[in-house]
Image (cartoon, rainbow, N blue to C red; front, side, top):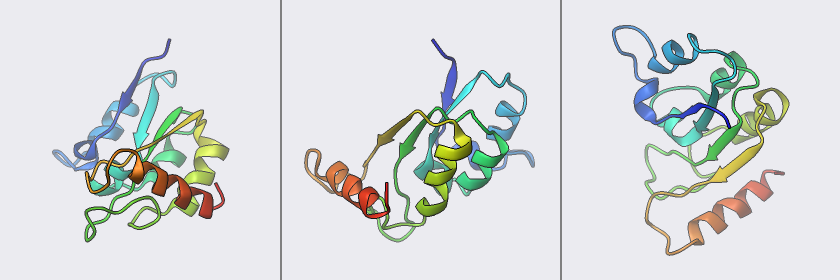
Length: 126
């Protein structure tokens, strides 16, 4: 059993000059794991590359979700996330054991958005 925290965008918006994510993970034991939601990090103005480098080995599960400020129904590979940087870091220094592919726009029926994201991940070499 592990203890961890799943982020949303709010944890990456400064509050009183500090980033809540950094306050929390900067003051917890390294055994407290991060469940990174990549789309939420980018939506909140954070940088998932920086987060992975700063908190090495703690990203045990990663929500693979796109974010785009201009395209609400963006799937993986169609938005602002730098997947070609993020995914190798998850594997090399993040300690990632599980990827959870997410699509929350509601633009696709059933699992169609997940299927499209998975195909785009394969196109990225993953």
